[in-house]
Image (cartoon, rainbow, N blue to C red; front, side, top):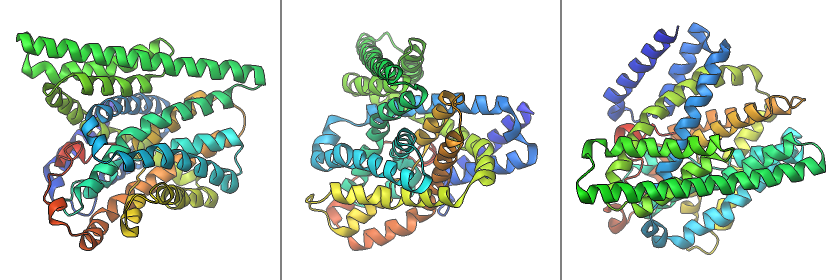
Length: 419
């Protein structure tokens, strides 16, 4: 069975890589989620417990690499160019999204506060790669693509502590246990941050020094950074710290200190993320989608629709008041907030941490996150080209459109598959 599935995944990757340049209607996540669902229905993959474990490990490792790449690609120059707009979305828009998502989860799903906060935080991060048709479209003004790019690159790392804290509050029962658990979670975040900064910074300095001395191999620079990103995640996890925060800050430190040579090395990691993301979306289609199909309810569907529209777009509109953007631009930025790999991993973390917690709320949380991501895959994937054309027709600017598109995650094959 394992060899058959591996062969099918390999064939799907080859077919997509060969013909993705002509795929103007569907995105890579749509393709691989569909293939995964078909394989699951034909071979019964979703019923295998070990398949779910393999899926969790693969997706967690993929997110660790993604977080590293995201943080390393967001340079200070990118932030300085539109720091007001980026600050509005991350400092004001993201917390508002989490809060509104939690309120909607309480009202629609009747979840208790900490479960509602978990859902709101898990579905707050965006994934620009699911809107790759927009991100790679030179008709869309460069600065708008850059804004979406920076927001997506940083909001998953910022949301991670909120998800972690909500899980701690759910697992621990009494006030004393919650206080102890919150302290442990805070220490885990701080330790993860320290591990990431130390490994990412020292790794960058070491590789830069080795390049200057001619000791390193150009061919192995990329694999070295790939291993460094995974090492930051694994060491933090083994120490009881937050591995995702560690990977995120390791990428930030590496991107700051590695110098220009680090861009090529990070690009290798990014290409690896492209392949890993294809597999992750295949596993999502094979493992999660059959469960969603059988367990969804109208309340979960309603929340998923609200999450992709009102819960995302209202905070964006409020945070961008006074930013000098017209309403078509605000609508465009608000709509292209796809949910992707980070939300899936948060759902897997919830499943792992809350498996012993009594009640049906856990299943409802997992189904809600899964269905929201599934809808996002199709709605954002299919609307990319049409809305990019609509928006570009109303915002023609020769100076903006002539600029080079954002390089991070935007080369045709691997980056369009990311998350």
